[in-house]
Length: 254
Image (cartoon, rainbow, N blue to C red; front, side, top):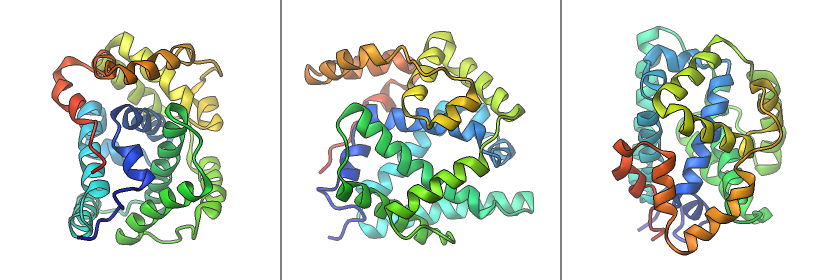
């Protein structure tokens, strides 16, 4: 059986660990709040109304794509495309091509940044492999003007960051929603984790300092994974209502 992502792929390793996935979406939640197309998320209301539900919904789609055979992965990607098409029809407007590319570029960046934060530096070959998976996803979605390789992606990613990010009233409101749904302690942890993976430009727009209080305790957390206590620490970071989803964040690479 042909899989969309090979079983031995670095991408399966990245998306198969719950803590890596949490850092991916911590970073993405910051960048979504700054994106000039964030009004599309407000049109559906899903992100501001239920940011954690949106997180686990997106994780579910990522699991289907990364860990499924090619046919099922294509069905999942097509479903994502259909959902966005329905939103466009309801609003009678098109989501800009650059906004679709931004999301794809986010997934590449935060996959790499989160893995390197928690594990090790990725090799050039692994970076190309990561790029290829999301390139094929974007191609299946019919996205235009995608970069041809990882090196070109780095250039386009920088251009997108400079052109497509800005602090707005949506940014302020989304962070209020994050705090409302997470509570003050977990909201603090979210922001501190964002500092570790978000690009410098986004950090400046959000008013983040360079130091994160999570930096000194990362070593302790990595040790907790060795003795299998990381699930407990994840449950501290996320509300108890999501206990089942927290345990399911870790997926066997096989």
